[in-house]
Length: 445
Image (tube, rainbow, N blue to C red):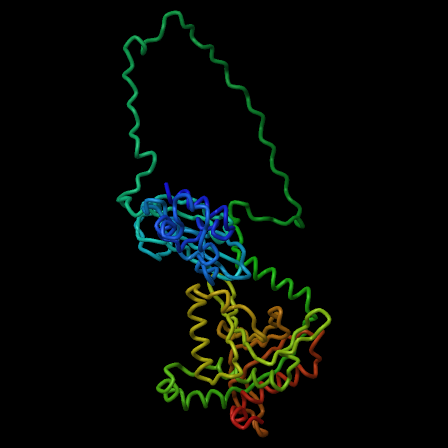
């Protein structure tokens, strides 16, 4: 009784504390309130109403469930999803009612515009029921499931048709089987002669032959794919995109990698890949041509004196673009570790919103899929994107001789509203020079 009175007082006195039912970190609400507020004549005075959650982050406010008064049932709710994410779609349940779950074990997955987030069980127990359904649009704090600590797990799930055995129909009496004397025989009419079916008209040769609808499947578009589609179309509608190309001889860079790959792994614990070299080359190009690292904001141009490189990663759910922060301050080993970590998280669907926010320049490597050449689309609100492609042995002229060399096409798509062709070509030439002769990075020439 005392806990209910205190609960009402808290909701009336503080709009913040009134949301406690959706704050998942409150494990024993009644016991905490009994020590917080005196019950009796002085119960209307809240002595610590402003200090109950000092400096609580939004994530902490939804990290645990609200428990019932007896501490037996807990509500699994949608966690905080990021500053820029207001809602998501309940994509699928990972458990069923009656399943036993451990504390912090994933119950369901929420699909947002950017990442997939797990809804975890607040306590160890048995899932009593689901409150939300798959496909529902949910917000942080929405109750998804009820977890009970005392309920026994269901051993078998019996279909409704099997739960209640069908009642046997009573035996038919003998007199009911025999026809009644007064019933008259039904007059059988002769079958009507059916009209012949009209022969299908022959279609004209120009009429398209469409496949039957039975061979098509219509499924809802995932939120991540919607977000990708909208952003790419917005980019196409906003930017004056132009693409310039060049080709780079990979001979020296591949030799450098081959000569020092074992020592690099032994010292740094990570393999030396090509991406770190291109990130370093892009950083050098952006420092030489700062306009490529800038962006238009209304009637102003914002110059960024830092380099955050976004790396496009393709996953089974769609394209994600995590960011390597302060790439201009990192060495080859730091970049390789950062790329490997982000790529692993992207594959597992564990990227956070912060890890994909921002970025001043993007690198997309279509070469890993065998792409020979392409025109990448700018990742807003950036102003340029570098496209890498597959390495192919091609005949090239070297010192008057025709030799087979490992060559790669490079593509730079840029916003022509901000970047002129001169700066774009100089930028791409800088990348070509650094990749073909990595010693330039050491000498800064």
